[in-house]
Length: 329
Image 1 (cartoon, rainbow, N blue to C red):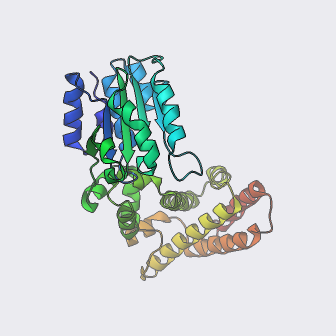
Image 2: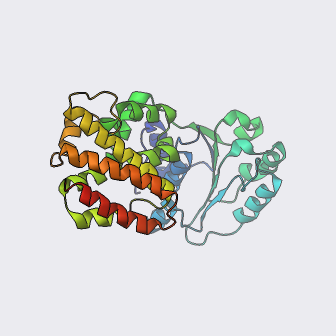
Image 3: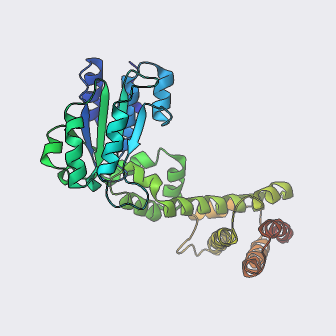
């Protein structure tokens, strides 16, 4: 047996239980995986299925959701509930023999949205499924399920992490480690917004975009400091996919340059991009103060001109030329 639970952080008691159940061939036919969004219910269900599979090639297909014998059912697009029609489709799929594996796995997401009629329709298949058919009912709260449904499946509660533990986990990722060093308050805001769930660290689009913009601004300043035209040109032509994105990136870059100027004049208050005075001073070591001011001026002019320039690629090339000329001062 290959253990695929190493993709799961924490949840040690549940991992021990499922490892033992799979080894002893005592895996139950249905489980309720309970936890808020981002707590890893879907990932955990796939890890259980993959660990049961003896062939690593097929296990990898389960983990990547490419196995025909791993099926997902849940809320349809623009639907607020899971109705009886979904359960009928599920039942039809249950009785089709596996294509590759010796078992079939069904992951039902957002089960808290199942109507009473849908839950009642699922009772018989949950109680007496065909051999080697396994169900994982993922829900924010098992209390949203009927007692008759809960009686047919053991409830496994996903671990919710405290802020300190989640912060330690996040810092294993270089991106979050970088954010924690540059902007500790912003990092802690991200940790709090995750509500104890690892998945929420990566599901928050706003946080991901903000982190990417900060990293791009730091990279742009680093290239300006290097004084090399070709790397600067290549970078400028790929750092944004829209005018609004380029505008925001230039704003972050200008704020970072102002951090540098403030530190050079002994006034590192309310820094916007850099974590410390030393980080800001080292970031543009080769640029003169006048060069930095010239770059800021070019950035401000470019931002003003962006709205009237429909050619994004042309604007990016022109930006590289202007910035390169500015750092020669």
